[in-house]
Image (cartoon, rainbow, N blue to C red; front, side, top):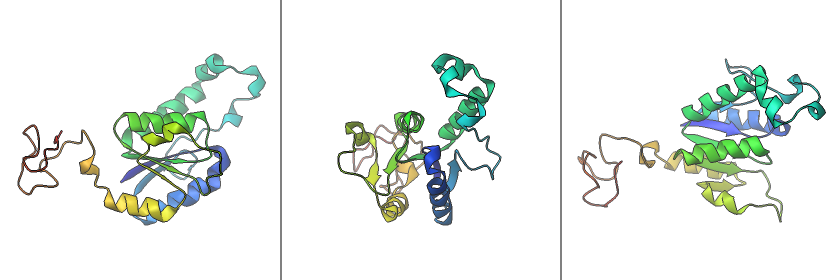
Length: 175
């Protein structure tokens, strides 16, 4: 599966460790902080003093625009977003964008402190503090079962071509 890791620069080492772990399980990965690939890696420190910036002039910087286009390219490429907490606004927007396009969203945090939660995490397909749950979930999940994913044959009914409105046995829309 193609997985985009969204998180905070504060989690850089954890993100790189998770990336390696998922690659050993056979997945394709993108991590915002991995400069070993051809990916454009952007860090806020490249811009200068944050007290001189606001949302408007920050977004006008060509490095920020390039970073946005790079991240969006990988968000469109992926089939799943792994949101590694704690994370800031951008990572949460990335997770929401991916989920909004009908793809998978997994939220992971090594330890969920009591009192730190969000109602909207209900959008996630999996919320966990256990990497083995991520592995099990990804092994079980067949990307062709995602809503809106075109397929030639129904994954549950041998021989059904998927071009009618719904599966004749399960009544599931095939598109």
